[in-house]
Length: 382
Image (tube, rainbow, N blue to C red):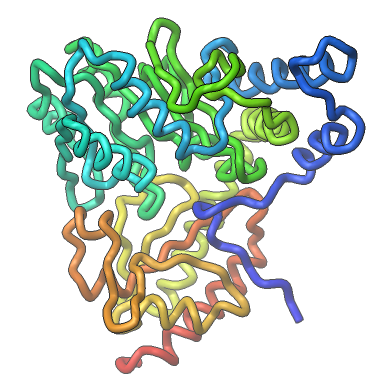
């Protein structure tokens, strides 16, 4: 029996073997507390410092601008909630988009209950925010703008550089969640002009349970939990050295192999789409603009085939995600597809396929055969 084909890299990535190897000493012998003065404590403190430099290099930041967190959700909470708490004098208005991840929208909903005001800027049919719409939403009391770098469901890349420039012109802080984009497309904080940027370890071939937040020098953030002074007191608690080392190594690899990995993701994604179209023709609908999209992400619908039935039919052989949530008596379309005004039937037929650096040409050939075969069996029109 052949190994199942994993095509859900946007959900999570496997840990790179080089990353696992780098982590191993800190599981076994180098277990010291970084706050301890003796040598195994100094060794782990030095390991954290090295990892901070590795993460900083990936996004062209200063190591002192990197804070390690427990996950991207914590980073987003610090970037939005922590910023608003530390900068109350700037105002109580936040601008975000209609296609944010729950790690941002839920923070905004919470802040809305605390007296802050949130504006959700609409998107076009491909899920892209128009910079002009962001500028129109700015008020005298706007303190923060948060627009994700690339969407996790459809892969659409947002005009972050243009929006950050607008924010800077109005002296408003700008945050971007780069969880899905880091390692796939360029995430140079100097080029983008952002003040805050979120990184997720488990989207970058590092373990789950580790993230990072870039905080440009001079930007104030208030911690949401209280303890000692680790991570400048913004994310206190004894450091997760093992996973920090993993994220550092993953960042080093992502920078080293960036061009090769990006090309492999793009080649395998496009080959799969071509294979599916050759077998299914007009039954395949692409939801995103692939020119302005993550190189690994394919949001597609198969006409007359319910996405959950397809995912279930191929679940022993190919792993993919769907664009809707299936409940006992109804199908709930994702908020992203709703914001894009995708037709309900298309949305309920939408799957997300995301390739990765370990995806091979053989994987793609098999996946195209398996998926197209299942679509033909499930479709009443073929």
